[in-house]
Length: 401
Image 1 (cartoon, helix red, strand yellow):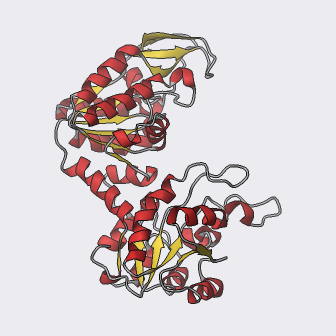
Image 2 (cartoon, helix red, strand yellow):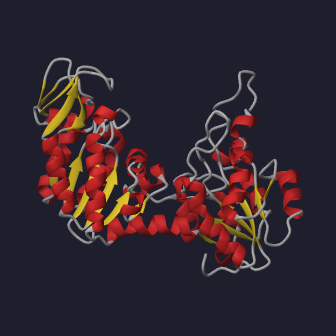
Image 3 (cartoon, rainbow, N blue to C red):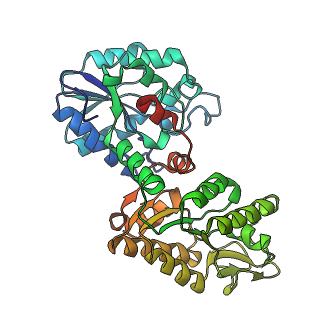
């Protein structure tokens, strides 16, 4: 967007304002909103008028009992006052994102003002990729900026199709989008080595492509969380009632063989904190990860694993972290994830580059106040995952070509 002209132009900015609200519709985490402010302010400073559009939740999948759309729950109007505070200026609101209502709201705009359009997902055409809706949305502005990395993996109207209505010199990436793409590329294509990927989470099936891709680029691959037990069982270990995907045992074996062939150090947790039931107040103890018996299940990595994983992280120059090491929501099984967060932060302070992406790992660094101690915290869970897997993101391609 630094190459584009904004003076006296109306600029449609796709942001990701899909923020969490409490029962009183108060924002509980405004990270995504704050992330968009530099882009909005730059356009205003350079003489542009800003028209913001975003999706919010899944209103057409969560209808009221009578089958109607729950406008009160899914309206972006809830965000207007806080957005005005963040920008230090009033923000107006349009009750629709396309059509006569939106067009009338845009026509009333004074130069240098900000308008927030209503939730794009109130229209079925948004997710279906309706060309007519894209044309209506494009009609509102002279320039299009995509700053919504979190939805860049969706070929929706407001993220992808609308961009095709703007010439190359009238569309671009916002600062958040640019930072996300550049930081992912730094890990994938220009890492300082050793490069270590820490992949956690519940299921191997959710991360197959990521694991396979990482084996082509990393020096060390640390696997934690529930998915580790599928690998441990594939090696012949006893895992009790731990989470396992029996239909992925052969795949786990293939991934371990690929790691050996590529010379990648694949680390599984040597020990685990196990529990006799899935609850924070369950009885728990530490055992070797391949010696879990009876009804016991692994819910966190143990002390030996924490030390080994931390040592590998501290010896790394580039670090990617995606996914927790255990049942992070339960305090008694959160220590492994906390230890990894601290190690990633310490390695970063010692000169490593670190990228944290994925809901629970982002939540961990935020909860521990370590977000400013790592190099980059991604705002886009699914989009970052697909980019790291090597997929082309429609929202990126629509602008970059």
